[in-house]
Image: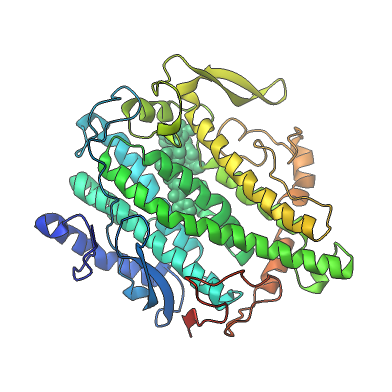
Length: 470
Ligand code: BYC
């Protein structure tokens, strides 16, 4: 299933055989490019960037690396190969053949899921559009742009589904995905986290660690879908997503490593004067990005999620590997709830607790990275540890959205929250300090002083490679 790059829109879905669809997507393409120029990375349009492009969707060997100008990137439509005789793995239709067209009764729900997924992709590019000008190295600059072009491609993936399977409604939704904008007062992005600013590189690394990881879990659940084109699209998107989370995890780790080096060599926690980011600020950024990302999983109890599961639209993470009847008819589960004046839990039917189940999978995964970051501190002989705040902290969606809770889960009054939240979440002053470090470092092989160099380069290239030709 090699991708044909001679086509105006590279694809492996035989677009040429459906002239109407091809024309409709070719009609959307200029709007996408206009959006990219206006809302995508600011500047750098004429610079050649060492980017990977998908050339095949087979596992391994799918990526081709070359210097490309971003507006000339070959965004396209790539679905993972179909699985022979795939059947629906869960819910009321379990065991039946997967759908290649959408059953009428599920159209509205599927559209909603695909529109939400589509919305996040350009949103993140908009959020990150200014970061290029303060990149700590050419390596990091290239990684930012790689993430950006792939989020652009993920939008293409969803827009293909909207155009191919939802007729006029789908075409309208594809247009709207370029008309809502991150943080826009009148036409904001759909989900909260995608309207927050990503103003500096620490925020970018946190975003790609925590928020892109929500992407991993949501895409994995949609990859189980009974609607086979959605499942196949998500399977391929997941291969690209892995690099984004690597950028986040390794980015935060490099920031911590530099801070730890300076803490050790000067025997102080007070490192701001020494030009690196103190652990207290790093912890506050973790608190913010983690809590905002927890909101992306929706309410603890959700009849929407139950309906998606029952109808086969959205499964659980690694559904196939779960050892149960995949119908959840009899099962119960405990979900977090405000009980007796504080965070507790209650038992509910398992099918109503699916958002929470996915959030739990996400939390375990987040903790693994935290362990690796703390290892860096340990290696430098630093006793202090970074941690994830309590799941009820700083929540805007779900059960805890109307309560105030400290990072350790202790309920606090409104007054205490007002007087203490600056200890827990980044303040304007913290952000200004981080911003003061964000000076571009574009010399080949050099890295800004608040972060350590990467362990290795991209695709076997050395650290002093010209990842972006400026
Ligand atoms: N913000 O039943 P509930 C990614 C709404 S990230 C605002 O509790 P549900 C990426 C909800 O719409 C992955 N509103 O939740 C990462 C509903 O509204 P209505 C993106 C929210 O529906 C980095 C009401 O609250 N993909 O790919 O089960 C870079 C009650 O909802 C929020 C997906 O999210 C929120 N945070 O679940 C680039 C997958 N949460 O009905 C990309 C598709 C809930 O009252 N989406 N609401 O009007 C979904 O599966 C579901 O829509 C959600 C929400 C999991 C988001």
